[in-house]
Image (spheres, rainbow, N blue to C red):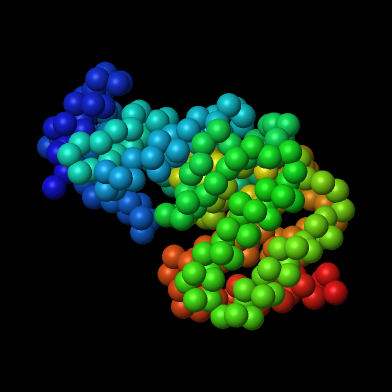
Length: 293
């Protein structure tokens, strides 16, 4: 049972907003959290809830959105507050009405994302650990991208997959790839500001056509990891990619690195949901290894 009076009192104390708790509507928000629109139009807010022990996940989301906003490139929802009440953790966010995208909106989004990726740090990682879906995602600062990806991305997912009884051939081939993938790169990547989980369900367009990104798994890393994920469950509009490349051309050999980076997310889906994702992940591993042979 959600203690709405207490949660909205915390929102009021932090923001001065007083959304009407008589108007609470359950809305779609993915498979992890339970989400609501609270209040009427002018004072409406978006609230995501989960178990109290998941508060750190919401705090990491807030930190990720704050870091992305520092790039001053792509719109993100304003974080109103995070907290808990009784057994419920929550994050309260600005509610943004969405609509379909025009070609011009897609092109502008491509340019904006490229500018976000041009906002860089000297090291890879982030101020806080976070989650990819509900899987922990470690983000310790590192001077070496390949070491970071080997240990905290692909290697971590392979360890989980082994615990989750993935086929032995997948693990063996995956470990081989984890030791040899540097050969896929012509140049060492730079530490760009990343969304981290940029599939189509995590971006949209406002009523004025402005792109907005949300639900990040933010860190600083190779920008190609973000671009790769935009293709994983259906690509964005072609003009999005054209505009992105006008600002940030992709290096030669990106196509196979796209498969390599998306392997992380398919392995994560296996670790969360099992099933045919193991077969898909193994095929991706084999495809990348064939390029290294």
